[in-house]
Length: 562
Ligand code: ATP
Ligand code: MG
Image (cartoon, rainbow, N blue to C red; front, side, top):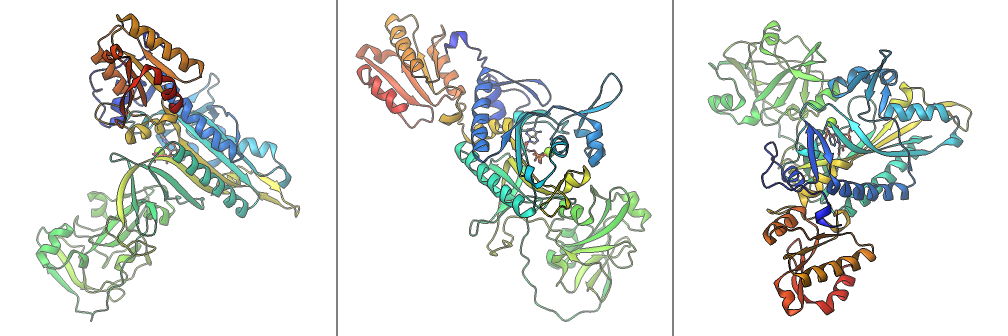
């Protein structure tokens, strides 16, 4: 490709709304351009990278035996109503009506559509197993679209769905997909972790996320360097050391004027924060109240609470709601409360602890369970953090942030039961099909790669996803000899099928270098002043090589590169 005939509108300035490197560089280097919030155009450079990523994914999905198809983006509401997701999906679902006033949605994911296809075409165990995938544009009206391709409202996903006759077979398929995902992310050159993920309250057996380590990532991960345990904080477990028993002291109500927060109470009463028990009043699905007790130094994990309550969402009760329950804000406590009380495991062997007294400016000290109040049980509601003991080997956990680029999920019968996707088994009985689903954020991967492959000048593409493999720069296009040599190398590479970009634009050498650094093509041949001595320069964009090469040695250099 000749740069003068190509479209690569580079920008000198960072886009105003861009904070993360991938967003800045992908826009500045002319890979993408915004059309509206969370909606991007893939320019020729971006499109080339996208196709390469897609093809790596395709290769490993095909090798794993999955069958590629393409489902409609426009999906009838009737399907979404069968599984209840027409309501559950909320505002993220892009909804529209046709001319007959029938409701439709733009697909944010395709469990309903594929399950409909399978239930209409599968009768017996002989028709199974099946494993389909597609690479397609998805629509989600995200509350906060941001970071360029990382969180779009229109984005490209690889979504796959498997159908098996038994859970045992479904787990085998899940393992095959897990293996394919490892191959994909390794081939893409990513530094990633596979982590245990939250499976939600309804359906779903287990789930893993593939998370690329980046400082600005929205996914919070804890992991153990010693034994390899890794999980999304939403799902992460941690070990709680057993506490020694203590003689029970007399419960006492103490005056704590305007002392509300855990830290204030600990300071005021001169007790460690681990002796304070927080009483958090939650409202589940806008109807039922519940109190949750948790040790002062541990944050409550709302995902775990939501799952335990089998709710869709939970939120903290607001001051008016607390008042209606007779609880002054900041002084909530379990004693005398007449809503269900649940406790985190951290409270299980705690003795003589401090709680709010449900009375303004008062706390109780030396409180004990079950002597002073009854609870429904002890559960895991805690949020794991750096330093907490690993649930497997008890070494201190580490914390990191990342970008979720893939998610695999053993769904079980959640969708097949709701939509009557059954098969007749060997024993003649009708049974629901066991499903799995497997997503990859294809467009998000472009950003994930740039997050891990860049420097302060621009992108440094790994060879296998680079838009071009070799970038030839002719620094002075007025120099006939330089043009001749440049075009000669260009033609030779093209003949060999190498993707090469020749910068023969009539602009300054400085601008050519700036653009080349921004674009990030991994290998570069610079035809400059040293041509007078019969030499050109071979450079790697990552800075590891910068060599003068005799023109006679050009062929062997190029051979080495290929
Ligand atoms: P997130 O927690 O980031 O919102 P999700 O759990 O909603 O992700 P899935 O429904 O599992 O995501 O979608 C599969 C994959 O699609 C994700 O792993 C992610 O890589 C990608 N993805 C999800 N939402 C977006 C988005 N708005 N823009 C770009 N990629 C996305
Ligand atoms: Mg999401």
